[in-house]
Amino acid sequence: MPSKNYVIIVAGGSGTRMQSALPKQFLPLNGRPLMFYTLEAFAKSRANPYIIVVMHPDFHDHWRQLCTTYRFEMPHELVAGGSTRFHSVKNGFNAIKNNDTIIAVHDAVRPLTAPEAIDKAYRYAETHGNAVVAVKSRDSVRRVIGKKSSALKREEIYLVQTPQTFIYNQLKTAYEQPYTDNFTDDASVVEAAGYHINLIEGNDTNIKITFPEDIAIAELLLSRKPSL
Ligand SMILES: Nc1ccn([C@@H]2O[C@H](COP(=O)(O)OP(=O)(O)OP(=O)(O)O)[C@@H](O)[C@H]2O)c(=O)n1
Ligand SMILES: C[C@](O)(CO)[C@H](O)COP(=O)(O)O
Image (cartoon, rainbow, N blue to C red; front, side):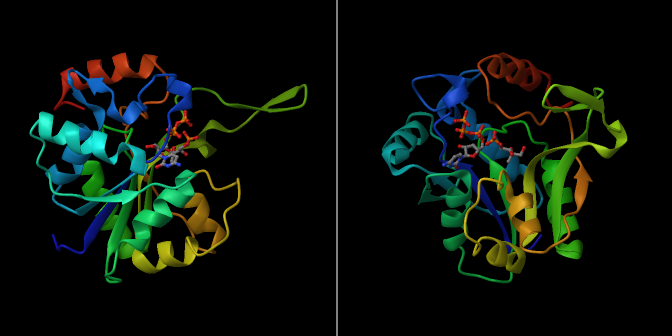
């Protein structure tokens, strides 16, 4: 695949819900820092993108030290994180100087993404402008407004993951918009800029490490690889 593929791996969060002293992206999974698995998934993909890692400057030295200690030599560019995920993605995007590119945005804390899913996202975005990985809800879904809850049609509900992959111009236009609290992911930013969002089927095992119990779940899933 062409070297016009990029990935912005956002690792600028503080992990408040994890309640650990060290932000969750640096915590070990089966003895190795969680983020190593995330970068490796992209390096193993046929898309083989140029990797940009976005991280708060206070942690750059810590990250470099981890790479040295574990002899982690995967090439990547380190960029300063921002105050929200939106601002971190924007900083990562501003590091890209080539506009003939396809750019995946991915949470550093999704270490279990299958390389095949990554390739599918780049391929689909190249022909359709964007591709956002999502999974069907496995449970019945209800909407709660005030004290009233009502059933939603489950087949209309998708849970959105990353990677979220876009051609350069879509991300550029989208991230020129002023920030609002409604921007929870890249799809919401790109949609607000007027683009149609394409969902592609993902995998339930592509979990985001958010709460303490997610570490044990991810370790179990990792031990079952490559059957993910
Ligand atoms: N200012 C920020 C905030 C979040 N992120 C990244 O965006 C992803 C979103 O996952 P999330 O679970 O929301 O991460 P945190 O913001 O760290 O977690 P929390 O909301 O619990 O504080 C993570 O990889 C996180 O590092 C980022 O790059 N810059
Ligand atoms: C981008 C994301 O991972 C898609 O599921 C998610 O929106 C991040 O949300 P969070 O509230 O920052 O965990």
